[in-house]
Length: 261
Ligand SMILES: Nc1ncnc2c1ncn2[C@@H]1O[C@H](COP(=O)(O)OP(=O)(O)O)[C@@H](O)[C@H]1O
Ligand SMILES: [Mg+2]
Image 1 (tube, rainbow, N blue to C red):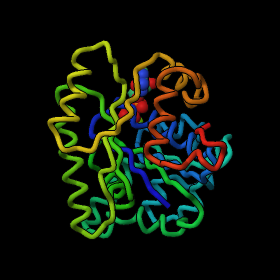
Image 2: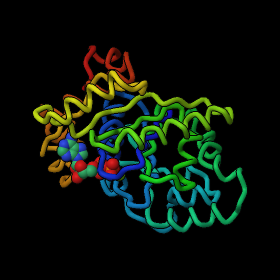
Image 3: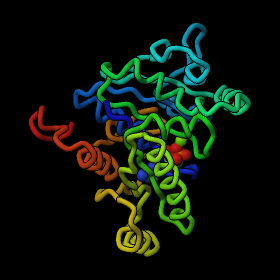
């Protein structure tokens, strides 16, 4: 089981869009996928039309010790399940901090041990801050993916993510900064072109070869609660997300006639 945590300390950089589209693409290609919404805003949950229901746990309950199995919900897509997140994460973060116990940082990792055999990929969509739930994601993940919108401050945030990954590794966790995914890219803008060039040539961060271009189709797809790769499969960001997932998980499409569906 590979676990991708989608992180960036900034909001609005397409973390949720990336998590939701990756999850959909991997599931459509026959992989068993679990998407965990680890953000108080609950955008990934809303995207996959999850609501709070009596008797069904959320990720906040998992942080309180509930079994992750009790929090897994199906979506309308085959092979794709979701653990929903909501405002209750704010309360649980305060509870975790009040415990002053370093073991609270590995609750999610331990919870996920129960489902190692059940999924091929887990994708954790994270909130843009270093709250206990997000620190848990760093320690539960095998791969950290950082969606990044080119702007003047984006590199600073990357350094913070990198140092968290190094800390996790130093503590014995087998996690790596797999790559930076440039999102909302506008090739007509000089700043975007130069920023990408800078990132690739003047820093040591691993940067995915594929970038995700800006398109109004993405916003439309979110409005429709549908992955853009399904809603407008020929648009540029849909092609980009397919190419990115193929780059991230090589051989994915080979079981089904070569190309990613
Ligand atoms: N490639 C894109 N082109 C245009 N708009 C995008 C693109 N990716 C994301 N967006 C829009 O940007 C906003 C923030 O995206 P979101 O995935 O919610 O970011 P985050 O989870 O990092 O806060 C949303 O309105 C989303 O529809
Ligand atoms: Mg989000």
